[in-house]
Amino acid sequence: EVQLVESGGGLVQPGGSLRLSCAASGFTFSDHHMDWVRQAPGKGLEWVGRSRKKGNRYTTEYAASVKGRFTISRDDSKNSLYLQMNSLKTEDTAVYYCARDSMRYGFDYWGQGTLVTVSS
Amino acid sequence: DIQLTQSPSFLSASVGDRVTITCRASQDISSYLAWYQQKPGKAPKLLIYIASTLQSGVPSRFSGSGSGTEFTLTISSLQPEDFATYYCQQLNSYPLTFGGGTKVEIK
Image 1 (cartoon, rainbow over the protein chains, first blue to last red):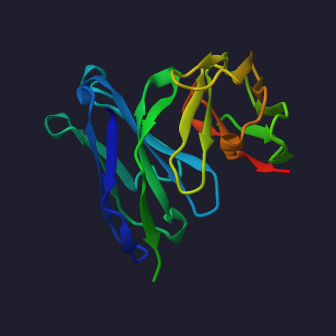
Image 2 (image 1 turned 60 degrees about the vertical axis):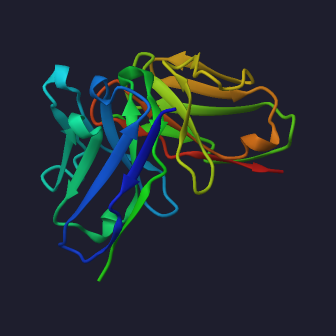
Image 3 (image 1 turned 180 degrees about the horizontal axis):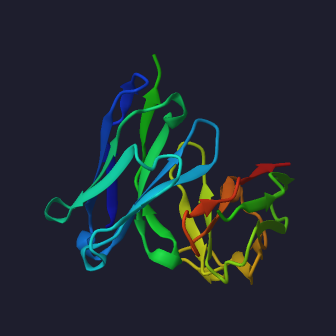
């Protein structure tokens, strides 16, 4: 069974940093691109960024709203995806989901999400 | 960036109704569109990809159509478990974008 479990969310002050993790199981993690998607309270879904697999040189893509502040990385040996968030703003407050990316076939598995609250 | 406009944003319907949600893209995205269902407090669930292909395990009352800039999600006979918010997503180009969502509520 495919499972994605996010962790690392919490309360952080504006300007602070936080690192989210996503632990994957039930599939060959190294064979898949992975993405982060967020959802502000009561709002819609916003794509954050993509981590491509080794065959695509582990390259990344980011939404303009987080580019230069957020960094996506992965450790295939640990079946884990990460989101390093720096210079956090109040508008980054959201539930952050990791998702398995089947490229143009959509995001077929999602984690349960982890809440990040940026507030003083 | 490609903008996706969903309509309506809110829909009130009864069990057994046929429901259609539209997603319009600001530019041609070929057939690279997916639909998701999200229930309160839960992660989104993939329903349809490449505009019209049903994800494994999704009931056949869900269907998708369209290409280019106009797409539809149809639920042929609304069931109690279908009351949720539905999102479209374009996978044609970066940044990947989602529509604003359509909330389907019980009439």
